[in-house]
Each structure stands twice: as structure tokens, then as C-alpha cells.
Image (cartoon, rainbow, N blue to C red; front, side, top):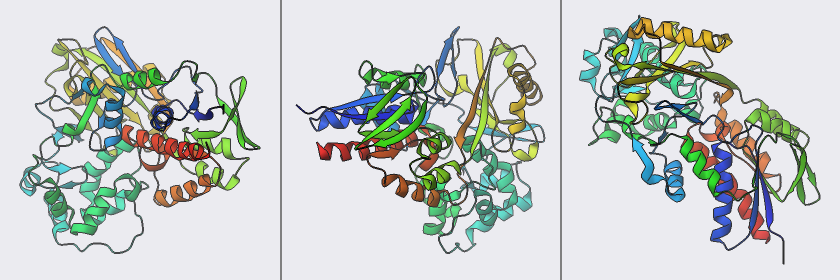
Length: 469
């Protein structure tokens, strides 16, 4: 009887867990046997995803939801049997606001991430000057750009819509997703939809209108969010339950990797691990250290992917002390020179996040352009956010709960040319036998992207091994 093929998955975030789960699924589908061993440096699984439940509040350390227009996460929830536990954003005022000169102004109806679709709503908005509004309208007649060369999100928005569109909306909305500097952020890697809109329709405004025909504009993007009713930790727990007993090794940091005959030899924790296949679902800088002795060129390319750090500060208040919160949150342009990137009114966004009579607010700080705020200790960081809430929301009461979660070097930065860099990385990784890479560093930072990346890596390694069986 032949022994089962063993695959080591390095990294216990959502990409690594999705990879481990997919390996077992594929083996079952093909009537084969694969042994999966997942090694994780920390004392728990989930990476930046963690849910705390305290006093009726549900506090998310990292992502609080995922988008359903990308199918990987939704499909995984279905296969895990938790799709019926998903909830969407609350109905009602699904609007976001933008800070301008210390005031919160609503994002114009029909403004979809980078560009407007409703010119009447744009004309009525106090967010832009008349010069800025007219400059945005020029998108209707500007020619499309030729060629395939990548450009930064900032250059793209200035070229199509002007400086005000960039500074007052596109930059803060993009920063809220990528914690990135729009001057360096690759349009092709981060928001290819808008590059494709220009190619197909020439005008972003006309292209977005064509795509949105028959779809209500107000709150359209918020309608795409979903999360487990009991928090994002539910997804991690469901994945962990599917792994066989003994498959997970916690506090087992991978520190060395070598090829030994036809197998991989991994140093992780106190015990060496021999495996037939390998999925590396660690941050690019950690993966670089592991492969340095195998392929220095690959290691250098991985190490060249920058990362930004950030933190979330979650504060809970009695509803009577929180005032009249409007919409689901706000973003803060970098030109405002405030420490916040954005704030989500968590208790307004999803049901069951706060007990009756209370509000739960989550602020985001740090990122590529505001890293100095992360030099504060937890108490000072929470105090800085409280001061911002006092100034912007007129909330001066002492919160009934406060939590600070830090994410050091957790968000990869997709610089201009990122996709070409990733293609070169993938080509060199493919030359290493039965090895694949997964995670947020490559082709998407959201939960669905990470799930897809982990599953694709698992399919690559699994198909290679099962073909030999």
C-alpha cells in the first residue's frame, strides 16, 4: 500500500486554511489520499481575522466582511455549510461620508469608488468646487489612453477626472481598502475594472452607467457585503473544523526550507517536516526568507513587495452619547492631515454587533501615508481616535469599551508594475517542484482574493502530486 502524499501548508491565515481545505477536498473528489500538515507561527489560526465577543459586543480585529461579487469566499462558505449564517448590511441609509475641513459631507449618490455616474447629484454636491465638477465632466469627451503600460491610481484619476476627484474621494476610498499611497498604487493590480472601463467605453462615466443600468445606485456597493452573523471568526472556525486532528501545528514558525531528493524538508518549530508538496501562504517577505537558498532571484522579487502597517481602534458608546450618526461611516482624505483613514459604524452596518441602546464604531489608522500614528502606544492611540470622534462626530463621552488591534506589515502594497512582478515570481516558483504560493501579496488583498489564491495554490500542488500517484 502506497503512503499518502504529504503537503505542508505554511501560514494559517485564510489563504493557508483555504489551501489546506481545498487539498483535502480534491483528494476526496479523486478518491486519493493526501495528508495535510498546516504550520503556523502564532498561537492561533486566522491571521488578521479574529472575532471577540464581549458584553454583547462583537469586535473584529481585521476584516469584518467580504464582497460577494467575487465568488470564492461565498462558494467556500457554501461548501463549509455556513452560507445560511451569512448576513448582509442593514437596509436603510447605506451611505458614506467624507471629511472636508472638519465636516462630514455625503458621498454624492452614484459615485462608484473613483468616478461619478449621476451628474445631477454631482452638481448638487458641496464636496467639490464648480471647477472640480466641470473637470470631472470632461471625462465624457476625453480620449482613451493607448498602450498597455501600467499607471498609478493617482495618475489615472487625475488624467480622467482631475485633482479634486483624486484628493477628495478617490484617494480616501482607495486608502480605506488598500491602506496605500495612491501615487504608487497600481491601477492594473488594484482596480483593473476602471482600466477596462476606459478601454471598452472610453469614458468612465459612460462605462459605469452602462454597467449599472437597471441597478439602484444608492448603497449599491454596500449591498455586496456579507459576513457570518457571529463574526468573521466563524469562517476560520469552520475551516479549522474540517482539518483532521493533528493536522495543525501552532507556534511552529518556518525558519528553513531545502530540497532533499524528491521531497521538501521544512524546519518549523521544534520538529523537522518532510513533505512531497508545499504551499507557502505567508507574507511575501517571510516567503522570501524561506526560498532564499533555493532561488535568490525569486527571493529578491518577493522581498521587493512592500507592506504597510495599520491598526483598528474599536470604541463602544451608549447610543444616547453617540449622537445622530448618519450613514455607515466616513473616510478621511490625506489632504485633511488627520490620523484617521476611515471609520465604520459597525453597529449600523451589520445586525448583532452591539447590544440594544449602544453603538460600536471602528476607526482605521496608519497605512502607507499615515504611519506616524502607529508610533503611539495603545492608550494614546485610543485617545487620539477619541479626540477625532469628539471633533468630527461631537462624541465626547467616555466609551464603555475600547479595543486596539495592530497589524504590523500586514497589507501588501501593489506598486505600479505589480502584475508584471507577480508574473515573474509565479514563473520562477513554478520551476520549483510541487510548490505554489498563495496569499494577499499577489493578485488581490480581500478575503475572496485570498481564498481564491489559496485554493489555486492547492490545486497546483495537488494536481502535481495526484498525477504521480
